[in-house]
View 1 (cartoon, rainbow, N blue to C red):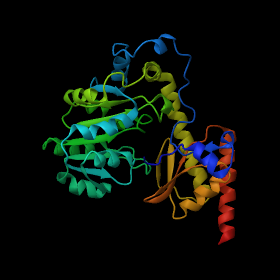
View 2: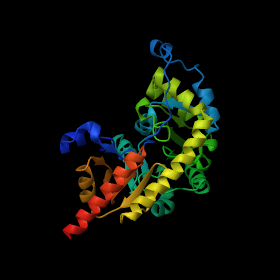
View 3: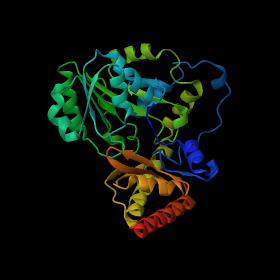
View 4: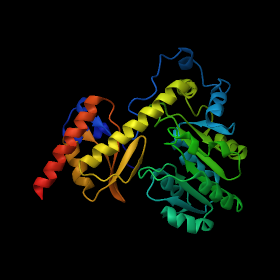
Length: 333
C-alpha cells in the first residue's frame, strides 16, 4: 500500500509523543469541517436505498445528473482501470500516487509526465489522468485546456479522468457541468472541503454507459446509509459552504504568509494546503515531528505539504515550531 498523510498513530509511536499531543497538518483535510448532527436511527437500521434523495441533492450541487455515489474517490480510482482494455495511460507528475498505482496494477502501461509533456504527448495515450487542482503542487488546469484534451481523447474512444478532490472551494473551475460528454470522467469527494474523510463518500461523474459499468463493478451499497445521509445534508447546506469558502481562502493565505515568514518558499497550493519544494524536507519533517507537528513529506520532487491549523492555539504552535526549527537549522550550518 502507498503512503498517505494522516498516519498519526504511527508517528506517535515513532516519536514517543502521545496521540493527543499532536498537531496533524499532513492531510489537506478541512480542520473545521461540516458539523455533523445526530443521525436518525433509521440510517443505521436499514440497508442504503438509492431512492433516499442523495442523487437528487448531488445532481443539484454538481450541476449534472450523470453521477454515481461511491465510497470516496478512492473506490473509483481503483475500479476505473478495470473497465478498459489494457492500454497506455498518461498520468500527471507529481500527483496523487494512487492513480498511477491503480492503472499499473490493472495491467496498463503508465507514464508519468509533467503538464508540458502531457500537452505534447496526449495523442499517444488511451487515458490521461490529472488532479485539478493538483495535489501536492496546487497546479490548476483551465476548463478550456481540459475540454480540448477530452475532445482529442474521445475522438479515439479515450478517457480524460479528472480528480477534483480539492475543487469544492472553487467550484466555478470544475468540469462537473460538462459531464455527459464522451470520454470525460470527474471524481469528487466529501473528504477534503467538507472534512468528512471518515465517511468514505464521494461521486464518480461520467457518461451513463461508464457509470453503469462502474456500478456493476462496485456492487450494491457502495456507500453506507450513514455516509449517504451525512453527504446529503452537507451538500444541501449552502450557507455553510459559502462561509467555509471564505474562511478557507483566508486561512490558506495566512498559512502561505506564515511559511514565507520563516524562510520557506511556497510554490503553490490550494485553499486547504500549501506546497513547499525543499531539498531539506526530511530534516524539516523530522524536526517538526519531534515537536509533535506532523506534515507530509514528498520525495519526488522533494518537498513538504502543510495543511491548515484548526484554531488560534494551533496557529501559534505552528509559528513557534517553525521558528525553532529554522533556528536549529541555521545553528547547525
